[in-house]
Length: 418
Image (cartoon, rainbow, N blue to C red; front, top):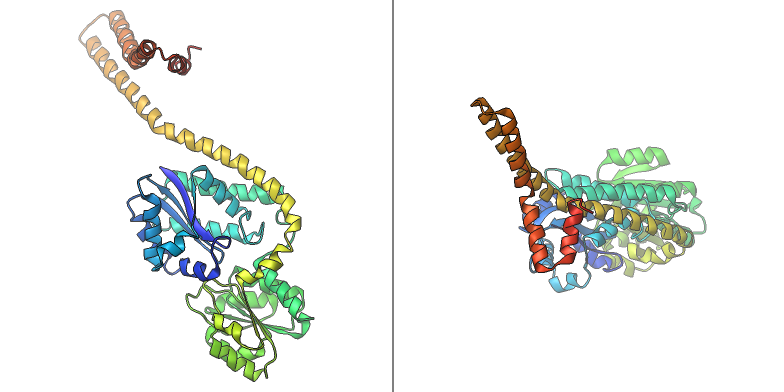
């Protein structure tokens, strides 16, 4: 059994590819069923966010394992294998464990140390457990990663400064508009990223916020907190002209805001500038919108420069965090290696118990037939000793005959003779 992590992220693939490799919540169960039906896959967790899509698997090592998994991924998403292969990364065993711990701790995020990723990893783990069984090793790897992430956040300053994609989006808005106190913001979606953006905007006294979401109930909870108005997604077309800033982050597989919609809004606004920040993957805003005069479209990849400028205070903490990850990974791998001996220990114990039970049954039968008790006990002790030391004796003898001093010493140590 091998632990394997493979995927693409913001460092290896542009958003144009990442959005085509995502697994939507609606199809995740179907994807897991398909993945677990692959003969080499024993268990799996799918992590799919705007910045990464990763598969964490326990697999049976076999020839062309990588090729088979790439083929499955590309067939599932109807993608070109060569295009995907260039952006994929692979991690095996201890490297897979280290990678997951780094991801859960925010050390591999676009925004170093961002806390949202831990919740996303936990959700991916929970979703992958629904109706599916995970190997003990894979389940333990995730549980360990959760505790490592908690330790990193508790023992270091990795989360000291409020830096996130949502924060970067709001920073961009403040760079373009002199004051947010005179602008109207339309937030599309009501997930964690939009929640963070709404709170940042409230702190900067934005004049008005409108939240558009598929389910009104979820959006209303956030709206009540930040003092926003709630509309449905179908209302966006008629209300877009009111917004100076649009920040969008939904799980929609298709764009929600099209070029024609924005053209109409700009006309109604008499070509006053419109800032659109599309954090979603797949994208919520058609890329052609960025070509319109007075429409300024930024994708999640465009936020990189803003994010980079906020990393300085987290880098020292990241060094401490990497040390924690290294320590915890070593501990986990020691546990994993010990598991490989579990079955051998179980078989050896079962064998010894079988010898014991067999000889005890014979001794009891002899006593019931009137045999001398002392003689029966002596015979039992002698036979039990001989049966239990038979295999070790053969191994010691063979090692001595072969002149294998190293093996002989290992056997002596394992038998407690040194």
